[in-house]
Image (cartoon, rainbow, N blue to C red; front, side):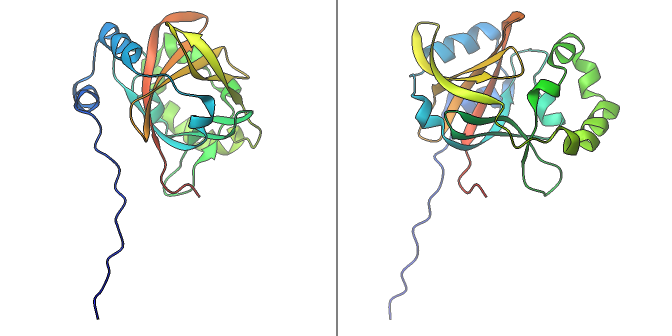
Length: 195
């Protein structure tokens, strides 16, 4: 009897430019140029759950979300979006209400946000920040010469603009409207087995 092996679905390797950015960082100007080169995508292409990782450009938020346990984002429909999922330990990711997070303070005092005390307070406070309500929506918005999927937050003056990297990855650029530049960059990778 011949045994048949099941085909293994593996994620494609990230492109070389993304691996270099993840390893070494990139200047803000080079990050914007890379973003501008990538193709647009429709809001429906963003549906699902995504793992997130910041991409270093010298922005005050670089690595701050990961230090607090950031998992990624979940888009149930264009009108039901959870822009911030966090995970404590091995538990499942939970949606957090962005309106309750002091983004402006984190931008002004990033070292405070990276402190052990604040990380511990956030970890303990996550259950109180948890929400089941959608805190954003997806739309198709013009930005830097292309109309592409964007996430518009409901409780913060934030818009995340997206461009396609490959079949499972998108590049995100966060605009915090009171402080339009510099921009925060992040990569989202489709979660292969959301629970």
